[in-house]
Length: 213
Image (cartoon, rainbow, N blue to C red):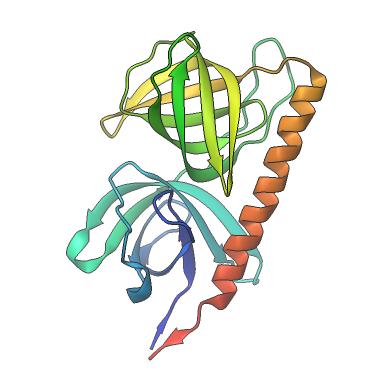
């Protein structure tokens, strides 16, 4: 009898995947096994961002971000490093912006270019986001980000403020640019609505997990 006790959101799957925790510490590094009914179409690569949901011992719902750092493909097992994003604050402002971990697809292009490149989004707030791309951009580049949120596509004007390399892909820190306060509030409302929807979906899938015999 195997209990499905964790759900995993990955950008290649429409719905969260039921998983079993095989070993490790969910606050640090741990291994999960994907459920038998979830394997099809789950192309998961090293470095991919994931959103993790499970119930704590007190039955409270816990959401965390993480990255795939290893895999045992034949066993459908994946090693995850939990790494919730830190709040960010820009030099010109003391206020911190809470970032929400996620695993989404999107596109990026330079402002004066028509060439779009695929990205995956690791976390976001209404002030910025962290993305992965195989393509090279430079710090201070002005870009347009298209984020695929549920059934909608939302475009943002942005600037690249940080660049590093992880797992053979470029990791970019993105600062979203708002025309005015109304634009900022609209973005905040969009993302708040999306976050609430994501939490509900993850929680509902977790509750639907049952015992397999």
